View 1 (tube, rainbow, N blue to C red):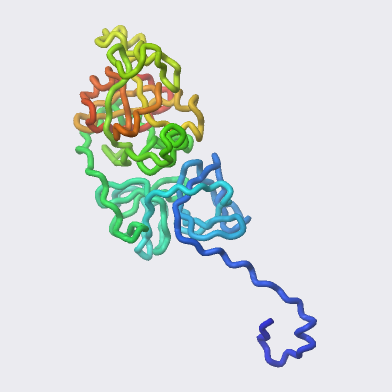
View 2 (view 1 turned 135 degrees about the vertical axis):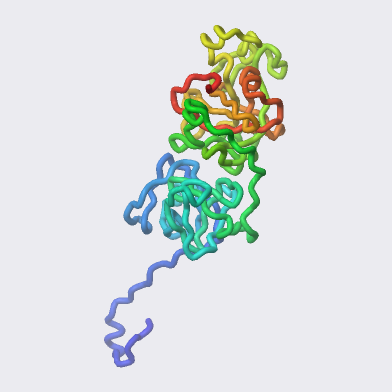
Length: 354
């Protein structure tokens, strides 16, 4: 026992209670962790007051642990979450190098400020565009200037994928009217670096390898290459093979291959459908079956809404999406050309977006 006053007698020292200091937080190397609960409370201290919540699949940088709790950087401050609902995720992260750095709702200073983060804080990187990096701020994603962060591996912030062509001005009632972001109900559009339990079960790959988060026309999309599937000419599937989500025979869809306007109006779901490597874990197959997606050709601005029918394509194709032959035709896409994918507003009817 250390005596802070030399005048304290030995007898008094023996009678005084000995208080152990609080257990220090266990230092650890920073690593990217992923939330495994549908909703996880974020607290100001271990077992402390609730500051807010984060959602399944969202990623944060863990810096230290203490008695079953993990410290993360969250919306510009230190916060704590239960380690029981976190999993190791890997993936990119950035370290803030400015003393005070604004996080904005989009990749420019014209967008609203969401929060301010400080030097030494670290955040999972979700994507990038020229001069800006998207990070997981709290339950929200935000954008920071790439000039004031560096990659946690030690280098500068990674260069983004080449930007897609500039978007034409959105037409009234066009794709901008149905665009609903890249996350719904806490579930993201599959993209590079995100954990995917279904992908792990099928191919043994735990993290989605393809698809870049980009901003196009002032909106967020996942960008990657595309191809087609389904319909009478899809000999890559057997005549009885069915879609993993809906159980429909794939070669019976998109028939005829040159539909009339009446066919498209009467049966739009038969002609506008999609396959992606969906993660069933957060909400299940039924959730994806009822979730329309928006697909845009960045080269010409054409857009369609499609329904989710199947799981794929195989990772060896390096593609992010397979579309119906009719959707590919209406978009003006050919195999391995890039497409942009986002959620469409719930209830949006499949078909061409006018």
